[in-house]
Amino acid sequence: MIGANNITEHLVDWYSKYNHEITIIEKKINKCHEFDQLYGPISQHGDAADLNIQKLAGMERADILIVTTKSDSTNFVISSLAKSNFNVNTIINRINNMNYSKAFEENGLDILINTESNILQSIEQETSILAPWSIAKLKTNPTKEIIGIKINDDSNIVGKSIGEIEFPSHSQLLLIIRSNGITDTPAEHKTIHPNDELIVLIQEGKKENMIEYLS
Amino acid sequence: MNNSKQTTDKNNCIIFGNSDISNFIIESLLNSNNNYNITFLSEDPLNTKFSNEINILNENIYDPKILKNLDFSKTKLSICCSQNTNLNILTASYMKSLKAENIFCCSYDTQYNNLLNSQNIITFNPWNIPNKLNSFWGN
Image 1 (cartoon, helix red, strand yellow):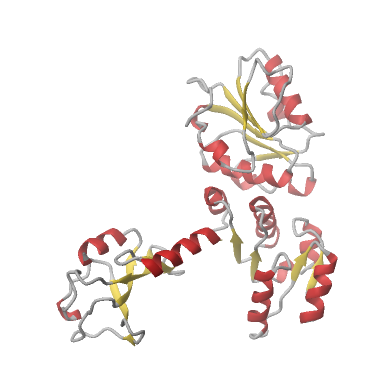
Image 2 (tube, rainbow over the protein chains, first blue to last red):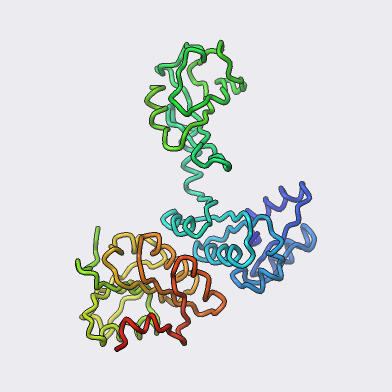
């Protein structure tokens, strides 16, 4: 992980529970000491954009690199160095300006986390009816996406049983979350009610078809 | 908004960032008699001897919006040569994603020299300008 900050602190807490070996590369020596006191000797002092520092940190043994500095260009250089020199399998980047996303992706750095997008997604999820929100793309098949949809009172499918509903092609209902929060596995006889949330597997880019069908 | 003054023929050059090396390159291109149409992206307000000969865009170079309005399909040469190596590297890759060709990236650190090879971006050190770049203004 790059940078001793709030994000990496949470991640260290999380990964430590599963006995993973963690190293944090941090420029500020006092931050290194702070993390070492909390978690044991896990810090490598230095600039992560320096190949020698990456070597000293043991980058060649890293399965995952998590880069979360506030500078897109710093994140890009650190990740590109690690990818080209140590062939790190999974690299997760914080990206602050999504305009740069293509540059990251075309350099093989395709796991991008953007705070603004995540906030917008949470707001959409909390406030929208019939506006699907993205939950995840399938790692093994990136053309498939899992989305959530909240059903409103006027939806075509309210009152229908799942057996009666013909979801758009290439989509599959995975789970129903009832308005009281109880989860319900889909079965033909079960009925859709207003304010149910449906968790659906769809073909990427077919959200609009789904909205049209459910409206 | 398209605030560039790129011409329709493919003789445009884009120089990203103000530095000694960018000034040297601009001067070399202007002296080459190749009639390059040069767009210079810089954060600093400039009043150089080239001011009347080139198109200067004064904007925040840390925001890629500055590049989005440029037409790289009409650009012969793109050079990232701000004083910030990391920014040059990211911007050069971003230019590549905008379909630019002949991209050169200035790095003040030799460890990055081969970093962008897979993208056909040539990284160079200001004290060692590659022949391929020199050829744009050489005889």
